[in-house]
Image 1 (cartoon, rainbow, N blue to C red):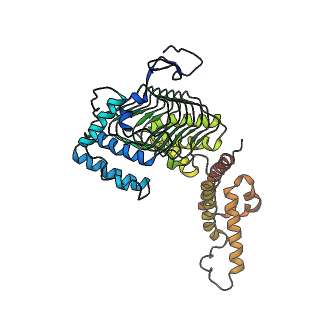
Image 2: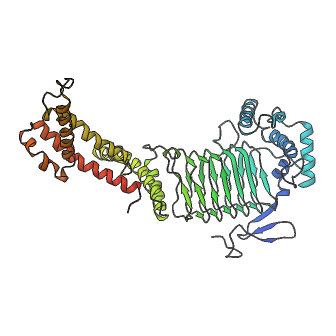
Image 3: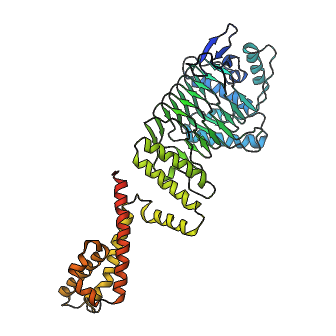
Length: 472
């Protein structure tokens, strides 16, 4: 384990600034200022925005950045990237915004642009600079003293490991196609991720890796992941959220783990979609005000391939909901867990029982399903019983003088069916004893089935009422 300068401070907290401009973290990691990082310089060739967001300055920097970042791609991939960028602009921005820049994005650097980059690198970085080759966007071991606003795409890996953000850090309208790492990063201020896509890495791009890491990342301010789409496995293992953590509108297409993670502020997953895998929250600390969605559309469909892992993850989410006294979510995750369990049963009888339980009662949560079955169990046999009380019921149904007799038969058949369905009330013996003595065998059989199923579905109805209205 890394020895800390001050055990009372987080590992990533700054404890010293040396005379040579190097910042030292509590865990001993040394950080260089962002102004000396060649990739930060490439992103701010036309200057830094110290007065807030300057759209014109950002457009100039974005044009030269994208020409550099995508200059190593072949023409075919370059053209595809340009088309995709245009589609994204039309989706994310107003029609007139950035329209003038579209023809310039994803074009190779011109000689004039290369000379401008060399001049800036020589002025801010080293005397005889070499323009970095796109492949890995390396901001590791970097100290950002100012607000950090990143609105750039990149076709390779992006590394922010051990990075320190002293103020707010915002990632907006970003698409990164390679592996992305925020391992052991430290966000002292607010961290915002809006419309960020960490996509699958196409084999035609010259980057490698298929993982997104926020392991041991420290979020000191609010962490907001709005509209983030991550198409690769993601890890927040041992991350710490000291303030609000909001994942509204985010989509995780593959595995995501929050194991050994601390959420010390309000945590919001209520509108977060997990497409193929259930997130894991083992051995972690959750804030009491934690929200998860209880809508199946936000959770992956159970399959044999993911049933075992998802069942264990749902069980953990059910435990978290129970600890937070949220019975609605607790039972929702129980239903999801049971759906996975049905796929894991090796014998057909076990699978049938679990699936039947889910079908007729939604695993003890539905009131409508068992109620509807009880109504059908009452009405269906009642129609058959009409001929018991009036053998010519159907033959004389349309006769002009049949109203009273038919009405009496309808009433008695409905009452007889009800007494069979709820036989424990004893209504059959009291009101229909004479009927049983002369009733044919089929009536006895149907009545017996009604009595058995009446007990079963009345139990399901009571179970649904208990769970739906949180009765304990």
